Length: 309
Image (tube, rainbow, N blue to C red; front, side, top):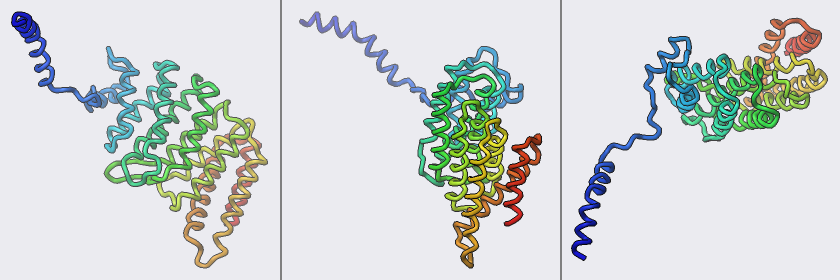
């Protein structure tokens, strides 16, 4: 028995020592970035070329982790800017990888939803902006498929309605812009051949609801981004002109209620101003478009409404 215990102790001593050594060694944080800030700066300076010997999807996943950063350089100047170039203009990600990113970023739209004034909005907002890049990529080389596209459109409309943090810009943390980024996403989705005629009314109604539920006058160009999404609808070959006319008439009718009270109710006045700025931006965008019968007709209709305001 003594010999057995001595043998086991002798045999286990190196193993125990190794275990102690491993326990004493510093454990690398799994979330620790693999590359420093200068690495990403060098990529941007080198015209966004993939560094030799690097796996692009691994780099993309690392950049995706920065979308929730309160650091505007990491989040916007580097992470989003590099991702946008690589996704929209560089054909180096497979369909499976792109679909994986879609799933990840759609999940991010729900992370912390309902919060206001917290940093959780950065991940939601910049995920929406990156999803817009995916939607643009899908226009060039389709990968979403009908099911993926429908889910992305549904999730985008849900996010537009549910986001409560509508800050545009922070002097320290930079652009937040959740409403504008979602408008960019809807504009790209509205240009897709998978966008149905009945989707036009859904998007227009969602935009109206966002402009009225904001309880503030957007002041960082959000109305122009919504106008861009509406323009994408008007420019479609299957544009639903009667549906648009009904939407415009309803918007105008609701806005007239603001003048029934003196002084006007604050919420109605803010909605009126948001709608007014959106229609002005829409008129400017339509004026700059190639003139088609549909574009000319809608431009006339929008100007007629603006003249009465």
